[in-house]
Length: 152
Length: 180
Image 1 (tube, each protein chain N blue to C red):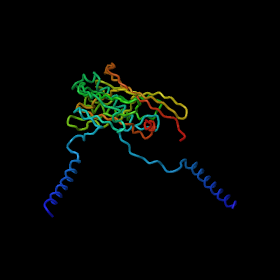
Image 2 (cartoon, each protein chain N blue to C red):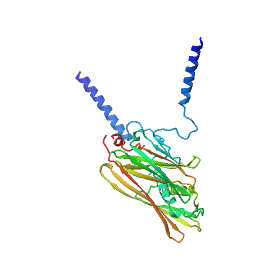
Image 3 (cartoon, rainbow over the protein chains, first blue to last red):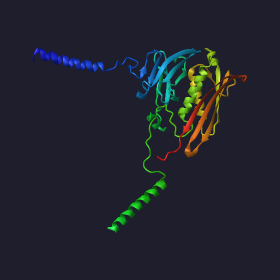
Image 4 (cartoon, helix red, strand yellow):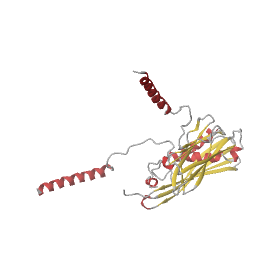
């Protein structure tokens, strides 16, 4: 085997290994950046929980304020389309180190008419709760008439 | 040939009759539906009545409003003694698990660390919380149903002064039965 063949083989193996490594996400980061997840505010992770909602429903302007010992958060949800959407939202709270502090949060249903904007508030259930994860999704309800959503 | 067709027809009728009798006797055709584990935050409903998920959602919402109120904000690090009174069920459904709703509310308030919870038998306390659940219901044709539940939470001082009142609503609608 001559030198050039050997060099080509080493380069090929190196390329495959580098390619393999680059596709692995860094396990130390909090979230892998994606179009459906907005982490631009360090205290708020905003998740659009369905590809069908991307560029149709947007999550904006996370705000925080302190009330006594508790933190209150507010997030705006805007409908960019002429369709009416029935959706669900959920607030999860984290402490300053990123640990979950309230795991009993439930999904809450709401309806956005065409072009409507709604704001949703939540109060952290302990004084340690300072950061939020706000998620919206299409209702995951096994018993409602899902065809109404599918028809859009 | 005609006799053969007649015999086959009789057999088909007999099998059909047998199936109908079996169906009436057992009340079901076919196999039972599979059971799935749902997400604990799920709010699925089979009837226009409250589920365990609704109890949690009610507790989350009313305590949310209570914890952000100026009254609670003014407590600071005082940790007043609080009684969470039994839930009064003023709905048309006596089957509502009032103890579960009470426990969820008490758990959330206690978990906040802002108060000391004492039993209803305690003689020394600063505030008492009284809770009540009510509903309205409308029935339509073909199984249509509209139910509207309201949970109210009122906080009184020892002398009976109302210090705060918070509520949350849950409307439930059941569509009409469809043939297909």
